[in-house]
Image (cartoon, rainbow, N blue to C red; front, side):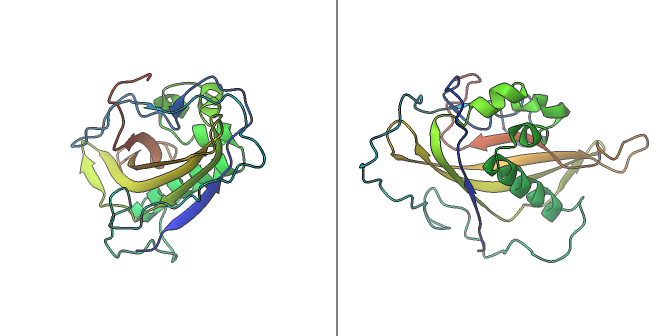
Length: 211
């Protein structure tokens, strides 16, 4: 399976949130239990000493516990339409690339409802990255598009591996991103027909919002 590694450098804002970014959606997609949650992570206090020998960040391989699905389905590099499943995966890749470059407000805007589905405003969203000195993600191949009531949903697996700023220790999580767009229905705007992030759910989330 082909992975898309994306290196993300955490923002230098003061830590005002201990949740692993991003926060999950305020709602769920049909057939998916993707409740609004924040993953608890250590609060950033101070940088580890410069001479500390960091443990390498080695995310689990595909097919291993904590790794992406080993379905042997590559993420296509060919042409695709924006409304396709690959178009949704491209939104996820763009999302993490924006975070990498520090454009948190633009990443936040890729959430549904003008960013509100992230669970907070753009400033709160950016602050979630403060506890990390490094933040990486591998993006897997998208699933099949699900349709219902004029809406479209698709999930894209994501593997996060980061370094906690306060301790220098690695941090790993496996989850999935659910994206949503309107179908071909009368009155839907181009913005509504574009894929937006509806929820991000990690496997070891505590299951309660705001933690």
